[in-house]
Amino acid sequence: MTVHNLYIFDRNGSCLHYGEWNRKKEAGISKDEEFKLMYGMLFSIRSFCSKMSPLDMKDGFLSFQTSKYKLHYYETPTGIKIIMNTDLGVPNARDILHQIYSTLYVEYIVKNPLCVLGEQLSSDLFSTRLDLYIRALPFFSPRAA
Amino acid sequence: MAIFSVYVVNKAGGLIYQFDNYVPRAEAEKTFSYPLDLVLKIHDEKVVVSFGQRDGIRGIKFIVLADPRQSGIDALLRKIYEIYSDFALKNPFYSLEMPIRCELFDQNLKGALEIAEKAGNFGPGS
Image (tube, rainbow over the protein chains, first blue to last red):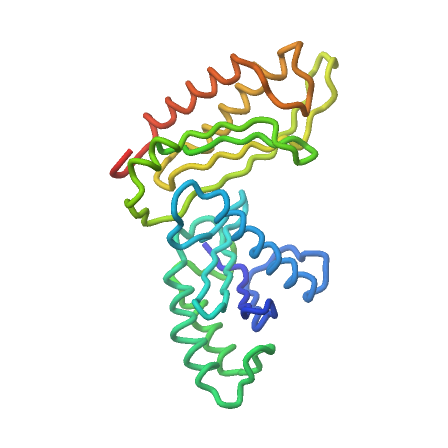
C-alpha cells in the first residue's frame, strides 16, 4: 500500500504544491501541462457528477479508481483542492486529506505572514512536514504493493 | 432501487442506450440523506468477432450509476457486456454504433439489474 503523489490547487487552478513519493511512470507532458490537465479534469468531473446525480448530492465527487491507482479528492469551502493518488488498498482518504489541510496547510501556510497565497508554496517547513506526515501514514510503504 | 441508471456510449461519444431506474425512489426518499456519494464506473471494451462479419469493435463504454453500498458492479458490467454482445451485436438488424432498439436486450438488461440488486445490496434502505 502506498501513496504515489499529492497535488494542492487553489481556487483559481494554480498548483500550490506537488509532492511525489512513488511514481513509476511519468505523464509524458511537462509539469505545468500536467497540473492544468489535472485541474481541468477535476473541474469537468465534478460538474459531470453533479449533473448526473439522481439524488441530492452531499459531498460531491470523492474519488475515482482505475485498475492500478485510486485518486482521492478533497475540497475546502475556500476552494483549496487536495488530490492524492494512492494504490487500490486505501479505502477512504478523505479524513487524511482533511488533516493535511487543517494541521499542515492552515498551520504552516495560512498562518505564515511571509507566504503569499496564490503562488507556488515556498515553505520548506511545510514541505518537510508534509513529507513526514505522508510517510507516517499507516498505508504508506516505500515500494508499491 | 440501488442501481439508478445504465448508459451505453459508442466510440464517437454518442449515447446509444439509456435506462433510468430512479424515479420511484426519488419520490419516496426525497428527504433521506445519503452519507456517501455515487459510485460511477466506466468500462472500456474491445471485441473482435472471429468469423469476420463485423470489424473489431472498440471503444464502447458502459456506464452504471449505482448506490455506493451496491456491490458486484464489476460483475454487473461484465454481464451487461455479455447481454450487449448476445442481443445487440448478434442481432442482424442492429448496426454498430447505432442506438440500441432490441427488445431482448432491454428485457435481459432489466433482468440482470434485478438479479444484481437482490444479490448485492448491503446496507439499510434498499
